[in-house]
Length: 354
Ligand SMILES: NC(=O)c1ccc[n+]([C@@H]2O[C@H](COP(=O)([O-])OP(=O)(O)OC[C@H]3O[C@@H](n4cnc5c(N)ncnc54)[C@H](O)[C@@H]3O)[C@@H](O)[C@H]2O)c1
Image 1 (tube, helix red, strand yellow):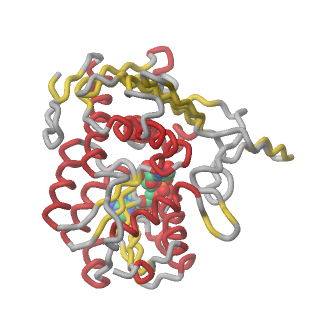
Image 2 (cartoon, rainbow, N blue to C red):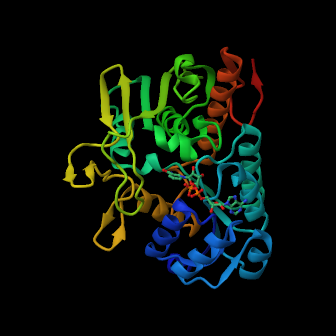
């Protein structure tokens, strides 16, 4: 398949869907159709991207257009179902995080993809961010010896929680990034999880979470997230996706012979302006000259190459993404039960034992 001629349909044209439509077009794909349940957004996006074929129902659009791939950038609770519809229509699928909101749905997508002989690339963007990619390379090359433990932390603005953080359990919005990163470093499934949330913060912000994960090879990971960054923090998302607020994250990889440590958003560039202080993130989706670069563009280039059969789907193996969904589901279950949760190991088995 010629990547220049790859025809894609975008499902969900909100904030991130619009960004994807732009980046896929910049990467050489043709956005031939748009689908959204919100007719106003659909009309606005159709005009913005000069796309004629639009619809609020996906199946008729796919029957009519027969695209090569479907990009799922809709609300989190719709992802798995839309993936299945797209696979049944013979399309490759790019699906934003989270792949699904349950391990059963995640493995269902895995099975459907295998049956259809199509690829599903999940938008675990952190895997494509240069600092994490470098950490992965350092680990694989043996620079820090055998992997022992991981510490991952990601805090978001309090106002984001109020605007979109609780449309699903916040674990699926924030922790899922770090759980997937942990799986990508260990490349094994999680077998035990114990998660707690701050009772002190619960009333105002039920989103201060600390989770301890144990993998089946004995590696441990802490994943922490708090949507409590105050409004006085410098804005980190500026440019292609303006969002007043901040992401503050750190990651540590501990090996027997060394350790790796990084901050998600570097303060290498600081802008002091009359409208506030900006520390723009330059790794996720920076505007470079006239197009968007960074992790998002690398992720899209990767998906196009996988769909076109030009490379192996080895940077975001679907099996690992399913392991991540299993672990996130266990975190949510552990929070609810206030108890440790054991998962059956081995991938493909989605039963959670208490
Ligand atoms: N990787 C990242 O860093 C990152 C960043 C932002 C958002 N996201 C993900 O992108 C997805 C979209 O987030 P957003 O911020 O753009 O949300 P949004 O609310 O701005 O847009 C979602 C759009 O999907 C539409 N939609 C909902 N259900 C639908 C359905 N069944 N069929 C068709 N359209 C439907 C809504 O009407 C809306 O227009 C989410 O999964 C989110 O987690 C990922």
